[in-house]
Length: 147
Image (cartoon, rainbow, N blue to C red; front, side, top):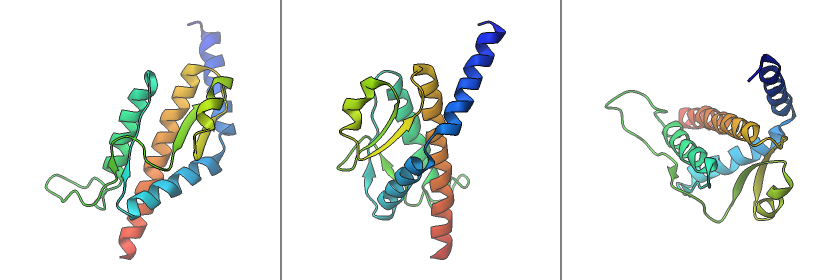
């Protein structure tokens, strides 16, 4: 990759991050928090590279939703979101490609990242995953502290 390509790619990712609809992420966080509160199960799935993100998300949600919030060895695991793959409420992470329309029609809570470049879509999905994990960790910590 030439320096111009690197700069262009990174600038495009920054523009896309700036344009992400934060309300979509908050809506997904509320659904996941409700799932945690009701001790329900979350299922994650994807195909191709998205299968790796689904696995990554399952790990992040599992470790970031225990009341001890990943304390230390020997501490109880607490109640974690049981993360396996998808239920009655659907959350969909996608890009702004036209090919996303069919999946979006089946999604209750979409998070659409505003780019059509596959690699950048994946970059932003990882960021959204981490934002959700940190958001839930903080929300759960406040919830547990109140109890």
